[in-house]
Length: 455
Image (cartoon, rainbow, N blue to C red; front, top):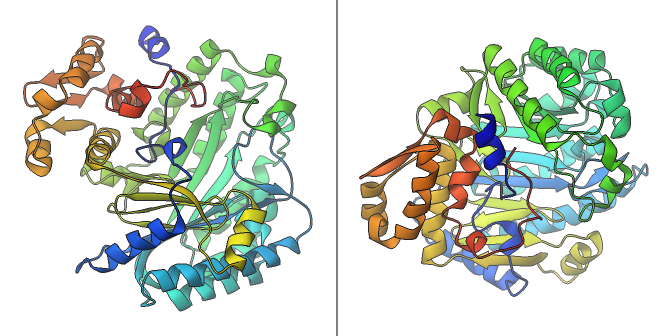
């Protein structure tokens, strides 16, 4: 197992989309996006929408962070940003036909959404409800920094309509927390989790990271034990990608404090064993869930999906991205908003959607997106199903890719049959490596250093 993990621990995309966001082009404009929304309105039976709302502000800089964020202690800055966000919401709603489309999923991320006051968040919710209708059984999640949340704030968030929480934990070891400039005691998080359960939040997720500075297998084992004791419904365990050449904040981390590749591998194996022993199902990549959680149920039933927030239980649907740098998906269109607040504001002041770049998928990209997402979510491909749905011949049209899969099959990552293939338990650990075989753009790309390692 160790040899295989080392062999396939290569840099590669996380496939929250295909093609990946680094393939988006600036030639894509707001007019292209508005065309996609207009085409959507012609579909008689439309799936509910998913919304992503980006709040970029944080009070303090976490050195590991690679998110689009603005560090400030000036709480008044949120009011200006939220006013701009409302302008974008109104423009998006108008482009959607102004008829309050149904939303079944909302994710508010950042940054730190709880940088905003409860009054500001409640006002934002109300404005969203003016332009969208929210399904009563929808999933409405918010990322929270435990350092900015109290029991009363949790109560207020629940009252607004949020029914899912994602706690940014990363690690509970004090030395590791100091090394990444994110100090938050275990007891405070444990108290908030208890309060969240009492308030009836349907699902609680915790984000963890392995491979952080000063982290060891022993310290990670202690953190995992503490997390397991809190029994979150889901756990996202991300591998830290140290890319200081791309992310300025990471330059504050001393290279010599970063665990080696071998140590990271040991951490991943430890976490996998410890979480599974605690009763968590391994969903794929970096996601774990309790067997009764909707995510684990969706995987067992073959309904798992993947979007820009990771694995999801919602049917594949169009995603409207709101806020600075937010990414959206409508049909075969991908789009991303301006990454800086200045550019975002400039577009809105002109009465334009702040689309900065995007992509329209051709038939080949759309087919490959289907293949990659099925691999990432279901872990198997049935050739006849693909042939019938896409009018192709998998054996002939993807002969080079299937030849590459033969080597992965020999290594035990998958079982290759005449009518398709399926991942093994080992293959699920390296599902990205299997998906990468069908990534036409990546196969022609000799510079993969911008991607994170698989392990």
